[in-house]
Image (cartoon, rainbow, N blue to C red; front, side, top):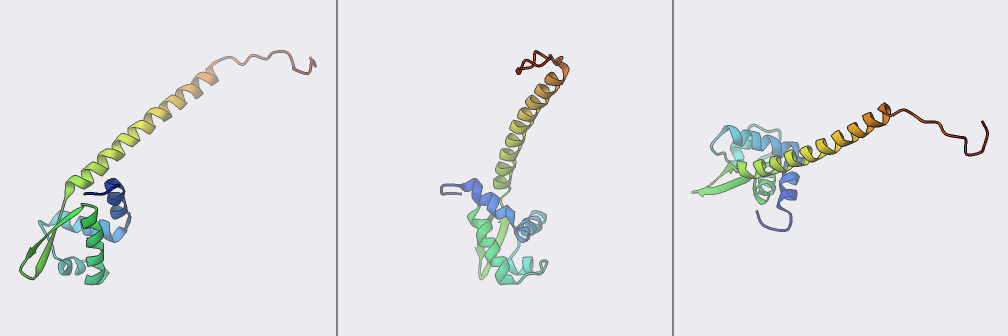
Amino acid sequence: MTGPDPLGRVFAGLADPTRRRILELLAGDEWATASTLAASLPVSRQAVLKHLVVLDRAGLVAHTRSGKEVRYSLRPQAVGEAGQRMVTLAATWDGRLEGIRRLAERSTEEPQTTGPDPDGVP
């Protein structure tokens, strides 16, 4: 993947349900053509080709030409990198939420002190 935001392209590629389904189909096979993928999807071969272009630009699939046929295969390392980024992000948020939970518990455990009324009314 090249360009300014490869991870953004991966997430954009994963954002569409048809593209996610294409990746699932490719995960089950060593390779597939646009025609074989279209046979398992409720979209045309042309639509599948457009989705494959997005997935290819995102680095999620690779393609090779065999005669007139273009074969597509899954590139799992891009998905793994995106998944690792999400795991790191989740761990960061888990740590922050744990800190908030501790602060909230501490504030409920501390006795509430009532001082004099700022208006001087007892």
